[in-house]
Length: 398
Image 1 (cartoon, rainbow, N blue to C red):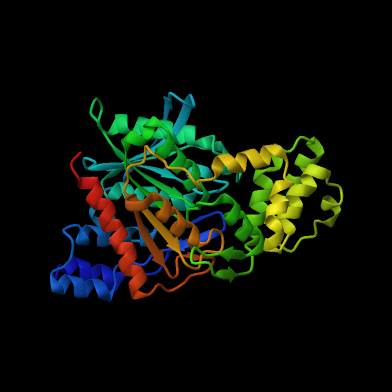
Image 2: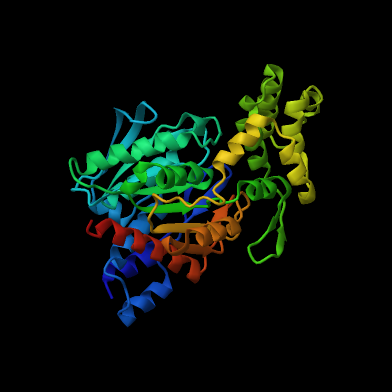
């Protein structure tokens, strides 16, 4: 067994990876089960490197073996003109050694966008793993808003990174997308010519059926792919992010102002009173508020049908249900926590079923937490396997 692998296991300390929207993701490095694999000789040729990269991600801004033996990746702000969305800017993270792969990284909803400190740390870890990493500026992310139109920005980012990674060659890159950012990312990779550049994709906490995801976020109820029902306390943060993200899709300026004020007040203090604002809403604003205030899953279809037309249209364009995503040829690594309180794990299960042989599904027991959790041996092994698969794709000949 390689001495370094045991060192990673013994030195590992639980740390939060990143918080995008309502969730803090925790990743544990390789544990006892990996030792068993090493002893049995079943470890992948990428096993040690995967252990190093996973430990570095888990360390966040703390010390790690990989950080100690590599120089700090260079982060630079670049500008380029995309063929679809026009002028764009992005952060480019370059490893000090020659990159062996390239990844476009798409965040979830965070007011800091590409500058979210935890996202920056994640991008630097990927760069230390010999990836050239590009994180595009997506203005809607900072507004806590998701829209299918952002797929154009992501498609341009894929094309730009491919050109920078291997100019003049038939280059391919990876795509990593988090939470609701996975929708526009998969649309970019699956329904635009940029998809021909995508060698692999990784989603963390993705959705498939946008209506089911909204029903879960607002009521806490969800019908799993096997037909059973789960019920949890709705995530208040997600509800008011939805409210704020759709405010500009109502026609009445006063409703737009009131919806933003309601969302901002509750996002700042979940216990604050909003009755004075809700009482002043007009019909369109009230329709959106009634949806997030509802706790009965049986009423969700009716409430969705009563939403303003622009909101309904946006939801239709964001929905992945029934889409073939023909440009996305895979593989697609779907990572989801069974304890996710924002998007249920059943959504990645349904997405995996729709993708068929292109999908590899990795469900973990404890992955999406507000507070620190302790991952079991099986979870650690699954996360380690994901990293191995990503490194294998990085090094696969074109």
